[in-house]
Length: 420
Image (cartoon, rainbow, N blue to C red; front, side, top):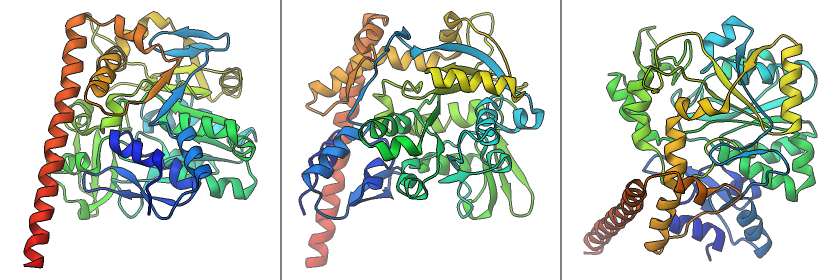
């Protein structure tokens, strides 16, 4: 069976985001790799038409953003308005990851009848540390799914089912998930009818399932003993908490769980991402971190506050109506403050041009970005940082190549032993 050129290019460059779009198109199935990431397996020969469709939709290969008259910030992309705020429901504000704003907007969309359901990620009931795509149809469903889930997920896998129902859905996903679905809407009217509203959040990358395993070790908890697992929530930023079947709990702070463990297991594609801020979405939410006197974010427990970004006229209308319906409290926000609140996003955007150069110098495929100000953001970085990022990417590729060759040598040696 010949591998589809689009999938071959993604594999060669390790550019897969794990969104599941290719699998939803047919002839491909997502599987969990030994490294702990979701990756596609081609099941049959794909036609040229199928391959071309994957190439158009895949967020790992390309992304184009058009401002179309909107404010267009070098780091944050096109937007209509930025605000801060939180859910008016105190219980939702406490349970969700950062003020409950995203969940409150989803509840408004359902109660107002603007959509029939919401496609979002929730905990897998069989493996509480893992994720699964779910369709929420009530405020109770939204509340159960509230909170960040720092593990691989492929929410686009449920797109064919949603189309078949003939109903309308809001879609919630990582920026790469939303970028893929937005491109899919552009070439397929049935997808556009099914998903009228796209909602995302600021994303720092997808950690592997191995990252979660390391987190469980730090919590001194066995995966089989877990009845419920929460990566964040129940406070802001909230603690990573494992609840055992006997009711006992173990937890780590956000700084220790994300900063100390999970962030070190983020997949390669996320390190060369130009869009951690959801430029293809109608609405994007994020943590509106407080900062100290030196301008560094504070991760002390307090009442959650969200950054709320409307990127389209539809998104702006939904936010305004959510406020009118008493689901949200919102306040003005100065975009100049965002760099201090989200230094990780700033650093990655400014480092991207140098990292992409490192890929190209090593002969590896790189994502094609248009309208995402990659060069302009890179020019904001100091030259020494750009040099470090370029050579750092080259070193990672060489290290990955050596590991791949070592793995092949081990497989060949095992095969020789079997044949002997």
